[in-house]
Structure formats: C-alpha cells, structure tokens
Length: 505
Image (tube, rainbow, N blue to C red; front, side, top):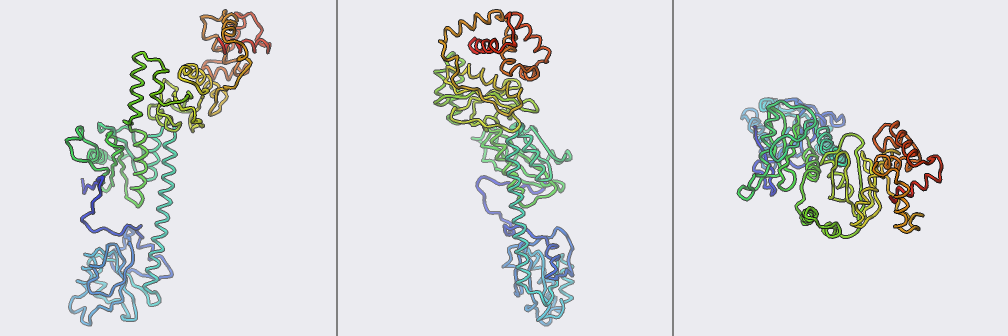
C-alpha cells in the first residue's frame, strides 16, 4: 500500500510541510474571472491545480515565507539587468517550487512591459503555472478574488457537511439503521462504505463495488485501527488511518472504545469535508454497534440473573430504575427486525431494555417518557404499570399493536381511564366473566378472535389483519362463538356484556 497515514488519539504535528487549513481554489476558477483577465502562458494546464492563497513578494528567494499552495505575485522588481544571461530565472523558479508555491503571477507594468521569455521557459521546464497579470489588474484585486473564491468554497463545504450530518442522522433513525447509514455515507463520498466486525469480516457494505485488490487493501488497513486481542500487552491503536491504492483513496475509523468494529471507506477522490462526514458516520455507527459496560449495564445483568434464579419482578424492578413502566410492542412496516434495528428503536424510545421476539420488538420504557411515533414502525403502548402489573401491561401493548396495525395508525395507546367495570367488585366481575364465557373455555383462538372482532367494531377485514388470518377464518370463528354462546352478536347489549366479560376473563 502506498503511504499509509494514521491519526492517533493524541495528534502530533506532521513532519512534512502542510498547506494552510483552508478550502482550495481551482486555478481554473481564478482564470475564469473576466474582471481579472489573467492569462496562463506557461506550465501545465491541469484542471486539478489548486491554490490556497495569494502572496506578493519581490524577494529573490521568497520560499522561506511560503506556507505552500500559494499563488505568488511579483512585478519583477527583484530581477537583475543581466538576469537572462546569468541563468537567474531557473534558480528563482526552482526556489518557488521547493517552497511549495502552486503558481506564479507576473504583473506587466510598470517595471516590465512583457513577461521575460526566460521566466516563461523556466516555468515551462519546471512545471510551474505562470500567469500574466495585465496592467489594469492590481495584485490586491487578485488576492481579493482568491479569498472570495475561498469563502465560497468554505460555505459550500459547510453546507455539504451539514446536509450530510442531517442525512446520516435520519438514516440512523430508520428501522435498518446500519445499512441506511452506510448507504447514505457511500452516496455522500461517491464511493463505497464498509462495516467490519471485530473478527475482520465484512458485516455490511454499500455503494460502488471495488476491485478485489482494493477490497483487500481496505480490509488490511482496517487492521491498523482494530484493537489487539490483548489490549494490555499492545500499544495504543490509532483512531483512524488513510492510504491510497491504485488511485483509490482509502480511510478507516475505529468505532467506539475497543469493541473492534471498524468503518472503512474507499473513493476515487478525497475532498474537503470528507473526513468530517465519515467521522459523523463513525460516531453514529459506534452508537449503533457499541455495547454498554456501565453500572446500568451491570444492574441489568444482575436483574436478569435474579429473574433466572426465581426472584419475583417486584424484587428485581429496583435494579432497573425506580417508577412505573410502559410496555411498548413494535413491528417494522417493511422487513423483519434485527438486533441492531431493535437496539436503535430502544435508543429512540429512551430505554435499553429491549427484547426481540420474532417479528415483534418489546421495549420496557420509563412511564415518564412519552413514546412518540417512529418512522418505519407501528407501535402499541400499554398503560403505566407497576412491576407486578407488567404481564398485564404486556398483553395491553400486544392488543394495542394489533389494533394499530389493523387501523393503520403509527401508534396506539391502551386506554387506561376508569370504566363502568371498575364499579363492580373484581371477584364478582371475574366470576360473572367465567360463567358467561364458559362455552369458550379451552378454545383460546375463539376467545381472542371474539375479543379482536369486538374491539374493532365488527370489522372482518381489520380483525383479519390484527390476527394475521384470512377474513373467512374470522367469520367462521365468530359464527362458532355465537353458536356456542347461544346469543345474537348483532345485539349491542350482548356485545357490551361480552366485552365486559372478555376484559375481566
């Protein structure tokens, strides 16, 4: 690989001279300014030539005062009378090139009527662009034009970075956050973005396909920033590294504090702002892939162990934080959820207590946090519940989710307001419910179908969607319920009494 560069946690000054930290300005953009009327008369006409500023000097050797990348402006005051005979211009141009000058601008008048032919030849020979500055164009006008172009470039760079940040943040909130972030990043960098796992394998990727040798070079570069298996015995690893392979620019970023995930990007060019955009993506991916080893994580682990060993929920709940909880059931609108999408949903709802059970994600949320609709998800939310009521809240959330999917709303909350049922003693209500629903005992599918059908106001289609069955199956089950109960389900009084019993039974 060609010239690998790494960025450790503590940044040390680079030994090689660097251009000023300003957006570069294409030389062609300066030549295109009609008000300046500049004309290139020697040197390569490379569209990729850029300048980082303008500097005026009449010194024989201006190189000690150059930072690199400047357009050096001179009127030729320093040129001796016998300059062409003494070979003065070859040395003068070589010193500018050695000092990092990007181009030379020669002002015609008042000292010289024309650009010295020997200077033209020297610039042509040493590959330094030479511009003719006409008499009516002042050096200050050229410098002002350079700074104006730089300000425009800086504004465009800031706008590009800001738009990329917003785009990446929106991608991280999608149901498939990691593929979405990688896809957006590859689009912003016009290249390919890859997420490597702790073992070095490619977990996910997006963007333009790259040749096998470039993929191998990027994977090898990722090993530079991946922490060693025994960190105590290894030196500190850099946070990022860059390289170039076959004209393709490579960069890798370590995610988090030692988990081993690495973001790699490969693109045909490296533009201003690319590092900032990739760094934003790295932070988002670190949040999406990182594992939390905090005291809260230890408390959750302790709570899990206690539950497995038989402790009641009331005893375990204080380890998860004081107060009541909401149970949220969620299903994505498109593909089945994965662990990363489930974790991202939990983060959006403000809780790390997430369970991925088949096609449904369950989240235990503090009651003081009000769940909001999440893009790409359908949510059902229970009423606030104490630990001993969590199983009932889980059932509430499941039913709310079924109704939300059936009615095609993004979020539905269980109604927790007092009802007429609260006026009847609980023991009497449960006895009445068991007696009324006795014909359905041992047939939970019939009872659940009747419950869903009544909750959805007798809609066959919505009930079928909520239960995930065919509408004819719903019709058959409801008809069977009517037959077993020996009642008319079209009677609103009957429906009301059955609904009361189903809620208590």
